[in-house]
Image (cartoon, rainbow, N blue to C red):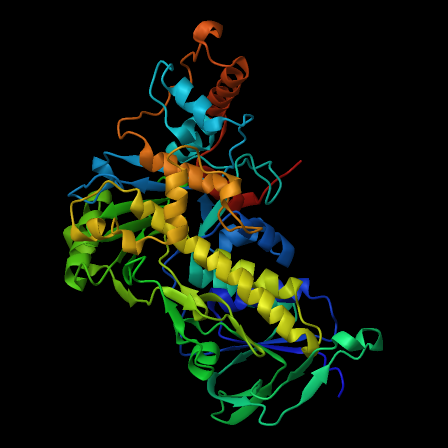
Length: 561
């Protein structure tokens, strides 16, 4: 029995998941002998409804070698600094941001709070301020930029650096195309445009083991029987041929051709926790002089919520809803009402001429993400509603994990597989728990949908425990039991406090003097707040709008000095 090296990686599926995975692997796996081939169906188009990313995308783009100016220009992208949650605590019959009665931000900047008793200090000072202040406003200055749709950096700020932490909004179809060109032209990824029509297994037992005699007592032996040996494709000449590989990555979306259909790895359905299983998406042309939001707008409605994402030339708007609580026609009426109210310059005829895409999905994740020599990334691994935009972040995390733990030899494949499955399961469980938090904290009771979210049987036990704990203290890093979580403790704090605060809290006037030294509040805490308010005022005066900075980038790129 001999050692067998893994040299040929075959990715099945393109789109954002496939090409981003290819780019990350090609840039991080430095073994010259390793080749990457991506097979993309010419018959399946990227949905392309507009996507949100996390700040991690800045590092990813830098690592794979794409300039930020090129990315922003080619992908119709804009800066995203937060998610703004609208009417998650109160009903709004118009479904419009124009009649907001409750909103809060989940900004990307971490909380730089210099005290261990943050919650107690905040609550004490909140009662003595000369105005009502929201938690996110008191903890930092990024909400000021979001409220004014200002950019998170200046034209002189180096690429991927920032004044305030940020991710992006982007056109998914254009992003996939940029990644494709970069992978093929610069990262030596082979591209095959073809449909996969067959999956072929190794039909005999081929044993491999670690050959180092020093560790002979611990040598692991694995049988490759049942591994994927090749996939059969039908190419442009209508001929069948086999593409062999050592490691296969399933990026085939909801079809999950390899992991789901071929290996029959079931989906762990999460609909009993998160009810949404349908969406309607539409693209609305954007006036090239119009303001561009610095945050994703997430507006709660009767049986779900509506996203509103501003790009340079269009807005991506979509309604995510539960088909058990609302019909397709009712959902369509709701999103049309939102568009009509939030886009007053759109005529009734223009509204009717918009192209609405109806999408259905099964909320859940695979019970295994890596099986034998096949690993799923993207929607083939699972999908949960797009609240908090975790989809692309999970692709990044999965691809980076594969690259870091890359099994150079088949003998260690079982070890890497087990690690990957454990870590990805933790990520999925945290996402489900964190998204459910938004619904559990809601005070809306205007429909059965919102009432059903309060049913204890729909709340994960781990979240019930945390909710009990948070009755007495603010969410903290101690509440997260695994390393490198997708959502840090600050995210829990922003959402928890944002949902708990009164609907009447106002944006603080940065010119108002805060507290006198005789207020009874810790002087260091007064200094902290004064610094926050001062920076809010300074940035509101100095930073350009999203639109202004993006226009400059298109004209000249970033001009760091």
